[in-house]
Image 1 (cartoon, rainbow, N blue to C red):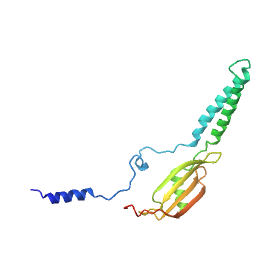
Image 2: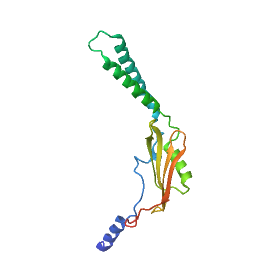
Image 3: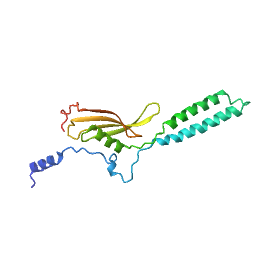
Image 4: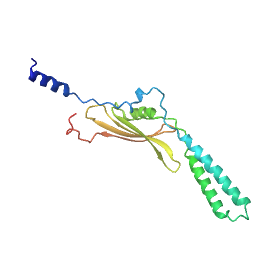
Length: 176
């Protein structure tokens, strides 16, 4: 006959596990079999070329179809507007030479502490929509002692801004 109390204690021991901090497989880049590439901004040249081609058609219709009732000054205005959108898209087609791993390495060098958890986000700044990595990092302790935010230019790799501070967050209420 099996002792019921020893079975209950064994089941309780199996249920109590230490929490493990790990990424799910679909977010962990190290488990990917194919190379992972972040989309490059140079793809913006495709819609820019389409804007320019459509603008050329509109402006040509306005210039050569004088007697047509369906073609008026609105075609010229639309064509010029599409030229403006095309220029803006072409200017914003920066070539990304710094990927998220490079931005993380640059942030680590700039902050001067070992990085634990980190997150990199691509953002765009200014009228020329220049790509910039915003890298948020924490030190590796269970309750991080330091945190930092680094802005890295995604075209040249220059550090644009740095915030490096002691972590003001109180995580003591969490059972870590």
